[in-house]
Each structure stands twice: as structure tokens, then as C-alpha cells.
Amino acid sequence: YDWFQLGIGIFGVIALFLIFFALVAIVVLRKKKSAKEIKIEVKILNKLYAENKNKILQNILESDEYKKFSKQEAENLKKIKKEKKENKEKKRIFVLDFIGDVAASCLPVFREHVTAVLQVARPTDEIMLRLESPGGYVHAYGLAASQLARIREKQIPLTICVDKVAASGGYMMACLADKIIAAPFSILGSVGVVANVPNFNRVLQKNNVDYLEMTAGEYKRTLTMLGEVTEKGKNKFQEQLEETHGLFKDHIKKYRPLIDIEAVATGEYWLGVKAIEHKLVDELKTSDDYLVCASESCQIIQIYTPKKESFREKLMGTASLFLSTAHHKKMELEKNYPLFM
Image 1: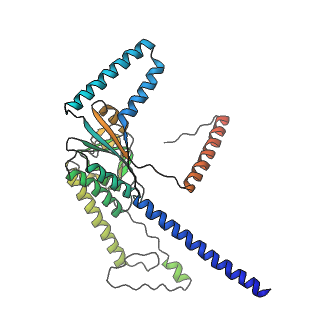
Image 2: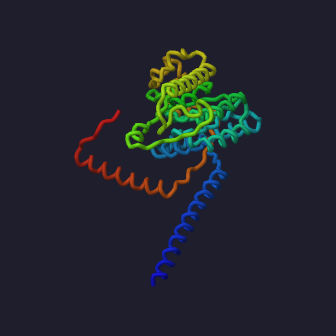
Image 3: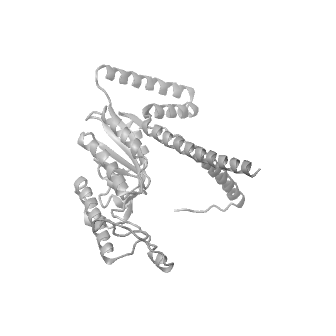
């Protein structure tokens, strides 16, 4: 009986290990597959705007007025088709999106989008990027900015629209635009560098724990989480931060020479209405206004990759919706609406 129990236990442990390695293999394979398969979709926004406009007018206009409007739209369509036949092609605006986090995790998809558009865009076209990012890792946002530099090198006009935030690494990207358009209360700037390194060396010393770290090279390690903090290490780390900050300032001066870089490179941020005074932006407007106005004379082409939600994201989304609905019902009952700024 004891041997039987031991055999079952060993079999159970082996089975658990096999299941664990199988799950790891599945995750790795799925990541490799998703990395290879970045599908690009195309949406003509002119068509979407027209459909929405027609839907509303059909419901609010009298029958005769709507017929008159439809006739005018048909004539405009004929005119566009005639221009195409005569090779009088409309200017095209390719719309890209960059919604950035600290690690700029959308970068692999963004690179593919830029590469795809650069293969078809003409110098007479335009690329418009809707940018939203509070910044993050220097190397990640440096590479993201390099993708926009590719557009500049091809001499294709680049417009960047900031509806919410383009700070720090986000502004490093934004300043590559030929024109920066920002919503009045969007956040821009934060031209600075920051690093946080918690240190537990005193805790180790208090508990008589030795931490051994072997290095070759005087500055292979400066400040670490477990090593002793030295003045020499702190000074070197600060020197590296200052050097990165200097490169950041040079980058902005190169692409926006009218900016007083010393005045804006303090790490502060500004709302759009103030950022325009510092020449951080060129125009105050939302991306929606810009695209709707441009759609009257240009073909607006959105390039995107549909996001596939994981099971965890779907579960979190359902829970969030449930909590939001419950909170809304509670507020309706109490008639006590909170104010946020």
C-alpha cells in the first residue's frame, strides 16, 4: 500500500511538471505566432463620416430636403469619379495611432504600420499620427521616435495630434512632426529624465546578510537595489542622467529650433493652451476636427490592427462594467455626483 501511494505521488509530480512545461510551451508558441502575425486593416474614414451624416439627416430632414441633399451628394460623387479618370487624385492622409505605456509595448505594431504606409505614400500625401503617451523607457521611446524620423527622411508631411497627453518620451516623438496639433487641455512637455532605485542594503546589513556582486569594469554597476550606495556610484548615475537629458534637449532643438529649450527642459508640463505660448505646439484643435475638415478635400485612410482581447482582459472588462453599472445606479439613487478635474 505504501509503495502504491508513493507511485501515485511520483506520477502526480511528474504530471504536474509536464502540464507546467506544456503551458509554458503553448505561451511561447502563441507569443511567437502573434509576433509574426501583425495583421493590418484599412478603413476609409470619408465613407464612415458620410454614412453617419446621412443617417442623421435622413431622420431630421423633411422628405423634400433630404432628396435635395441626396442629389447634391450624388453630383459630388460623380465629380470625384471624373477627377479620378483625369488623374486628378485627391491628397491622401494616412491616419496612424500610437497609444503608449511605459514600455511602449505597441511599438512592434506601430513599426509595421509605418513600414506599410511608407511603401505607398507619395510626397504629396500626408501622415497623421494620433499620439497618446506619458513617456517611459528611454530606449523604447528613442526607437519609436526613430520610426517617425523615417517619415521625415522620406519627405512626407507629418502631422501629430495630441488629444490627451504627449509628455517626456511622448513629446520626444511629437517634436518630429512638421506640425503639432493639441487639444486645449492636453498635457505636453515634461522634458526631463528620472530614475527610481529602491535600495535594501541597510536591511541586509541589519539582518547580517552579505550581498556579493562581482563586476569587471569600474562602472558596470553604479546604484543597485541590494548593493551599498556610494558617493562615487551616485555621482556617476547622476552624470548618466544629465547626459541623457542633454541628448533629449538636443533632439528637441533639432526638430523645433524656435523653442527656448532651457525654458522648457525643466521637467515641467503644460496644458495645450499654455504649451502653444512656449511653441511646444503649433495649433489648438482636436484630432476629430482636423480629420473632419480635411475629409472635405482629402481621402482619409486609417491604418490599424484589430486588438484581440485575452480571456483575462475580457474577464476584467466584464467585472469593470458590472462595477461601473452598480456605481452609476448607486449615484442615481443618492443624487450625489462627484466632480473630477
